[in-house]
Length: 162
Ligand SMILES: Cc1cc2nc3c(=O)[nH]c(=O)nc-3n(C[C@H](O)[C@H](O)[C@H](O)COP(=O)(O)O)c2cc1C
Image (cartoon, rainbow, N blue to C red; front, side, top):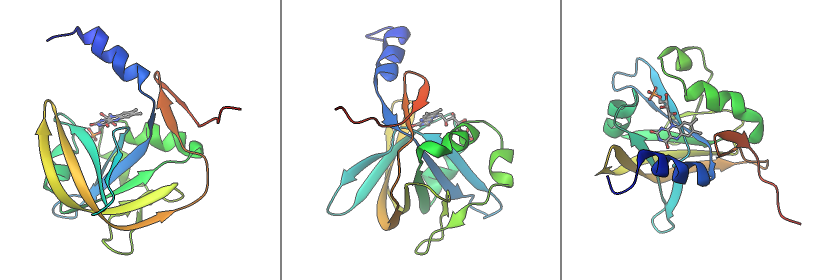
């Protein structure tokens, strides 16, 4: 490794990011899989593409890389508990959660999120110990509010400079 693990982790701590929940139906539609991510990025305007990265050892990995569609919910600052919930392990985290369903692709979405994005899977790029999942945006809803951000292992929100 060209740098130490500690150096790499410090880079991660220096990078502030918006917090999202990515969710999809299991292939047999028996359950929803969902995880918290800070790797969501808007990628391309024309066509409208977005992406996130998922680690190989996530329980949601095999479902998400095989799924035809997924939902991305950009969380509001009031939704910190949901970020913590979906960052946990265990199938129970989605069992009694009231996901909304998108109007276009019927993907699972978090109610009251700042943005609810319905994506069809466009491309999967294997990269290191993550897969980059690229989605074509087929539907979206946004609402006004403050974003939930993650920086230096803490949740917070956006404060404009004076
Ligand atoms: C703020 C935050 C951001 C995260 N971002 C990512 C990410 O971009 N990609 C990823 O694979 N895991 C990310 N994680 C870790 C997953 O949420 C965590 O490993 C989760 O337990 C995976 O769930 P699963 O095993 O049910 O799939 C993040 C966790 C937190 C708290």
